[in-house]
Image (cartoon, rainbow, N blue to C red):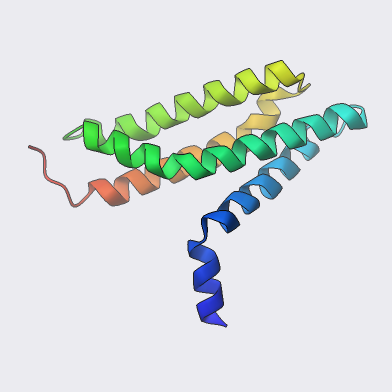
Amino acid sequence: MSGLVARLGRSSAVHVAFAFLAMGGWALFANRDYPLPRMLMAGAVQGMLSACLTLFLKRAVEALSNLFSGGVRLVAPPLIACLGSATILVVFHMLSGTPEILKTIAVPLAVSTSYAAIYNYSISRGRTAP
């Protein structure tokens, strides 16, 4: 059983599906006071964006981490990832007519930024400044 759990934990498809369901579900909750079509659109948009961002965030942090050295290496990659994610989330939610944009993106942005910071720290801590 633990072999199955380990395989699922390493599966990109599982991570993407989880991001879609969890953050799309959050968007439904954040927009629950609005008519069903608007609420469902917010959930679908957030779910798709979270799935895509989950797929690319790890690679982006790795690439950004290689661009910087010293203390900047610890701060810049997660900050850039946060700003990029926030921009993408706000633009797509504005275009789709999401009623509660800030409430909708608050949790997904906090989760993705936390992940980026922790992952960046974990890959940066063993490197020495050139």
